[in-house]
Amino acid sequence: MKSIHPTEQQIREFLAKKESGPIVMINLLKFKKEVDSDGSTSEDRYDRYMIHVAPILKNLGGRLLWMGSVDQVFIGSEEEDKWDRVLLVEYPSRTSFFQMISDPAYLEIHKDREIALERSALLPSTTMMSMIS
Image 1 (tube, helix red, strand yellow):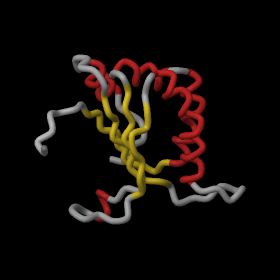
Image 2: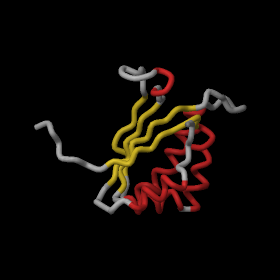
Image 3: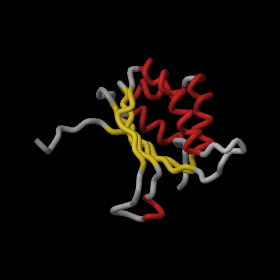
């Protein structure tokens, strides 16, 4: 299923989880192929979103941990598992993430994200003890 928004069920499940400290949202992004009339690409549009969301993220105590482009599918299906970009974004809590995505200022900025993406997956994750010394 191609989507860029959570379902009501996904929101309920996300908010029902017990707060356990910081959360890292793993963002998997697939950009649209279209180019705007001004020549900007979907990636350009998403980069504009990132620039505008950065101060909101910082004010919440969140931070971008890592961002990179994907150059191939090594294990998996090229059609189903091919993403263009991956981001790891840390938030102080589930509550802070939900506060951000509910903020009217964020929702205005979010329009660039919506326009840029063909599909996305956001995977909330929490830290586990490292198995590697």
